[in-house]
Length: 478
Ligand SMILES: Cc1cc2nc3c(=O)[nH]c(=O)nc-3n(C[C@H](O)[C@H](O)[C@H](O)COP(=O)(O)OP(=O)(O)OC[C@H]3O[C@@H](n4cnc5c(N)ncnc54)[C@H](O)[C@@H]3O)c2cc1C
Image: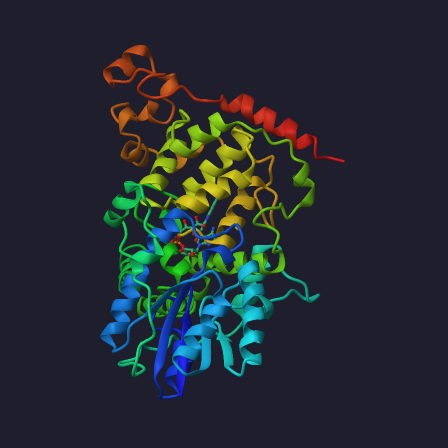
């Protein structure tokens, strides 16, 4: 008898519940990945995600081959039909996988599970992506949480999630491997050379995920809370793409953090560490998406559907390209374009600028992030954008409007981050780096800047834009 392990967003061998269960049968295993983007509704993987997926699948295949079995890749229109085809080709009896929680995918998976069972297969799904699955956390009245703090408090009142299982030493393969597409046939890499530079910043794959976690714990965990808002520092884990693709799981992060903190004397306080608190936001994002499946496109606070957004392709393009004239916004948008990632504080600043200074719909920002982030994740991206726009659960109130300049002065006081990503203004003294339009002509000249030519004037005046945003908000009041 043979077991099929259907890999999805769990591209790892350690702490992989479906693979661990399959190995317990002691029989051959067929590892399969099906690329069927058309089934992901409008949220098919964006260009940066595809780049990551390409490299991650190659790494998973190498890891599997080291254990004696190759990853079977299929490019498909219909996942259910493809699963049945591979299953029949290889004489499979069981099909195991780890759950995903995006609305379109989980609805599809329920249909697939029923169809496989009807066709006589044993079909079982597992949790490997979350510490606490959405239905295991409910408030006292049995309803989903909409505020983070009580949600996380309840999570922390539960026992630790299970310890991660080790990777297998060997995997038994079938006598005749099923036909597999070549990785290049999935056409995941962009046609433009835009993503070529990503490899200087990232090494997709499980081994790199573990290195990244260990390096973070050793170098940055201790000062995470105080440094995590400073975009110039490497003070956060950068685990987000690895967690999204499941090259490392949150249980592994949880237990590695526990062990590290305990070894460093934090025997009782580690559960309340700020790092796990942030991992809690990832759990909360999945909780919200599960219970409010329309939120990727529609505001959770329904009155925001009437918000008088502008439509302006010119300002949208300036934001996307990082030429708004606000250095911190431009630095963030260029970091995103060049590396496929942006620091969380700067995601908040650039997001706020789009919705509250440019008055452009948050959905346009979410769509751009979706296409350009290597960690694009439907749950976390939706939560982030609804938070920024003030229309989600536990969100920043709309009337609290970030001033991009004061944010920059607070979180990038010497302008190190801005100089890294906006080199054309790097020669400005610290006092002008976040507001070049306030510099005298002499200062601009000696820094080699001609505003409007080498660097733009601000495309909006923040003080005026702020008043306009508040007036727009007032139209929502009954
Ligand atoms: C507008 C906006 C859009 C966002 N889009 C995404 C997205 O598509 N994918 C994504 O993974 N994160 C998203 N985030 C959340 C956050 O910015 C990233 O998770 C974080 O910057 C990743 O860097 P890190 O791994 O170094 O995080 P760390 O600070 O090291 O945190 C550890 C892990 O906790 C989780 N986490 C941390 N902060 C958040 C948060 N605010 N919400 C949810 N999970 C969090 C991530 O999985 C992260 O890897 C978005 C935030 C905003 C404001």
